[in-house]
Figure 1 (cartoon, one colour):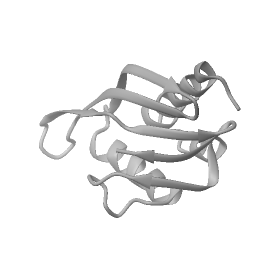
Figure 2 (spheres, rainbow, N blue to C red):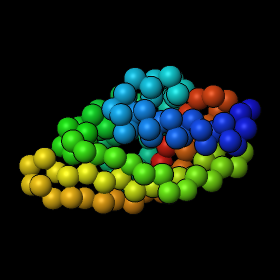
Figure 3 (spheres, rainbow, N blue to C red):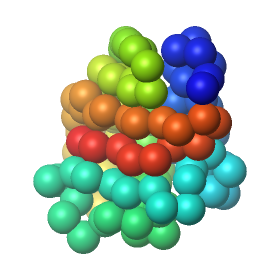
Figure 4 (cartoon, rainbow, N blue to C red):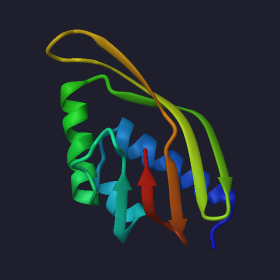
Length: 116
């Protein structure tokens, strides 16, 4: 089992490399083969492939897309993140700020699921 600090570092890497830098390949490295996504805001995204596609689409629609991690709290195999993502809509020019509090469950060095 990874330490809570290791789990938090992995979540930071997920956000920084995968979300903020757009390197969706990092999700493959950090996720278990049976990874599942639960988020009522994205009802069509359940698998890792779905999630990677949604991140790519978000970064296309919001070219300055950036997630700021406000807090990470870890216990056992779970990490809760309080974050804000911001971006300017390419079509409308409207700036969006969204607050998230997803729960990430881990097994060893791999992510098993993420919920919105």
